[in-house]
Amino acid sequence: EIVLTQSPATLSLSPGERATLSCRASQSVTNYLAWYQHKPGQAPRLLIFDASSRATGIPARFSGSGSGADFTLTISSLEPDDFAVYYCHQHSDRPLTFGGGTKVEIK
Amino acid sequence: EVQLVESGGDLVQPGGSLRLSCAASGFTFTNYAMSWVRQAPGKGLEWVSSINAGAGSPHLADSVKGRFTISRDNSRDIVYLQMTSLRGEDTATYYCARAISTRGYNLDWGQGTLVVVSS
Image (cartoon, rainbow over all chains, first blue to last red; front, side, top):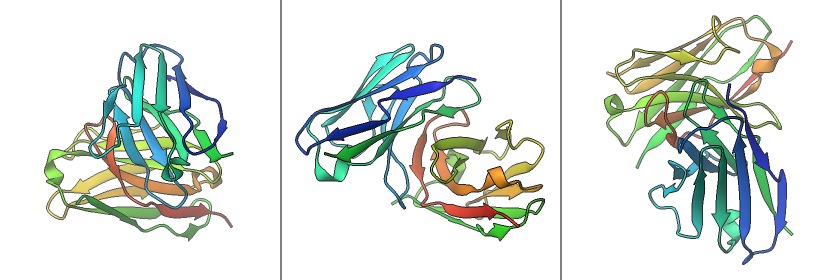
């Protein structure tokens, strides 16, 4: 099973600041990596697929990068609506797995 | 607009059974794989099961293999998760998702349905 390790577990930032979230895989997933945003009581939302492609309707302040085993989700300037938990997800190999999540909270 | 509406979550005793349903609308159901993902209280997301568009090739996580079954009714645009021999560790919010494939990412998710396994 491919293990995804996300860091940091919590990121405390102010609106307008840049957020950099990391996801490291225990082995290469090539570019089969997605990122989701999840708020309490809501459906998770796809942000990024194939490591760096923005999903439909996702603002340009969200960007993904990386390949192989190291990936980054960057939010260039945090909006109030961006404070949430973010998960990475590999679909290179079964079983599909998710990272433990990074909570982006208001400082 | 894509909508995925889960139902069937409940309080059930250990060893019991439950069937979750997910009604889909807003897209051509027969063009997409469907998945179930769960989230235990205070924990992260865990993939549970996926089924391809044609209702074949079901895949299950090892943690539920032999106890859970995924199926779909393409005439009614519904995907099911039949859960048997439920355990406390199955307590979670269960999300239905539209997937790009059975080994793909999830395009859209429902709001989830809560399953609590407790005596």
